[in-house]
Image (cartoon, rainbow, N blue to C red; front, side):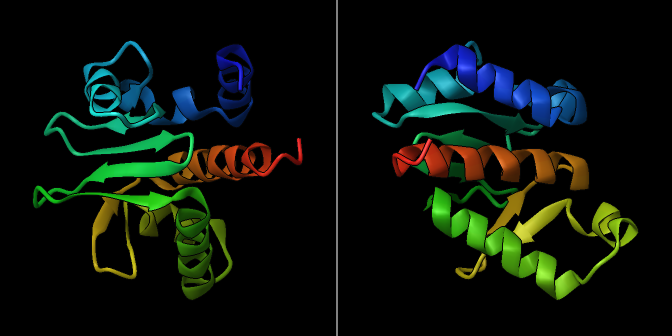
Length: 136
């Protein structure tokens, strides 16, 4: 995967716009630290308290507000977002208020910032999942 293609994709998804000051990429310390640990982190969000949700080539890496670090496969993360969206129901206004965090099946509370950022992250995850399966 070429980094410039990924950057074009996140630009189309408006991830930088929606996540604002919380957007992180390969130049950010958190990405550098994760990659130094052997992870293949690409981009994501991180707040001022250090809580992050980072998309990698195969996993989404996160640090919860309680200090728990974890990872989840792109497919499982996408499935969790889908399940939560189905639980919330239809209606963009509901999403606006429901997606500051998502609670995974293992009860980890993963930060998403807001609904717009959640949708942008989700679209990026779906795209990475697609190209990872050799279908792009």
